[in-house]
Image (cartoon, rainbow, N blue to C red):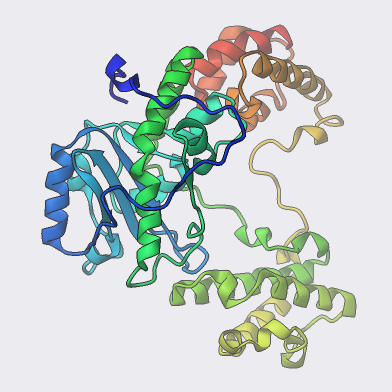
Length: 428
């Protein structure tokens, strides 16, 4: 993040403390921008943004409830002196699956990018190679301030004194042309982010937390291009799976989920719009309660969702999935519970790792108390996963240097280690 100057914190709106009706920010100050879809229009936007001043406000719109991928269908950018620009990244894909905005990003590499909940936007920005070298995450800043509400609308009310409407947040942003009221919504999401940043900088400075925030933002920027780690057995996230116990029925869920995933990918549709989770688990539950070992077409049709217009077109695929599940050797049937990735949850440590169990339940309350003292959510003071990995099957004796070294390996930031290491060592 660029150095924060005194000028940047001037004229910051006063914090609102009373329950008031805030004016709704409904119309962009400069009108609704045209969507940029041509090389000529993009070149104009790039020149304007490069010539602008101050930080760059950034947001994206996706269509995850409608499309298979989480790619960006709209990119919103705003900078003082340059105005707001709405860019359709899909118009610049050519014969590639994603646009390549690496040169565009390089032109803005010395600028602080403002994002709200950056971890949600960075993956789709990475896909189009439009990533910051320095950023300011307004949601994370609000968490470090321990604010009670950290969504963008709430922060805008508190910091800027206006309300943002969020009625289009879950819209199908792959729709073309994008409706004008949606474009107004998208433009407004970045219109006052600079004001919000200035307010948050002032509050972080007053709370002696600005350095903490800068470390967090630097970490986010450094890891913005990291690939998302694939999830082990993602089919186990199917809604309703907790009620299924029989391995053969679990195999049905696994095969139907895998088939649905392939169909959804081919159609570029959200998997839930191809076949609802509940249909998959309802069929597996029927198999379990009926004690059948193989399901047929008539069994498939017992679950109404398999008769839906789109779903029924793939009946042969569902039946093939059921056949694969029935043919799965007993030794290859899925277990009810997946072995944990890393340490199990601390509540299960008592029998096998009693010392670690006792240590966890000494240290966790001490960290909670520390978080209250420094006015932080305890999960921002130290990641629960970092604490679990540090304490699981841990040695009887240790020292601050060893604890700090392990936390460095896990990715804890300097400011976190300065706070937590003495407390952890004291309660070891």
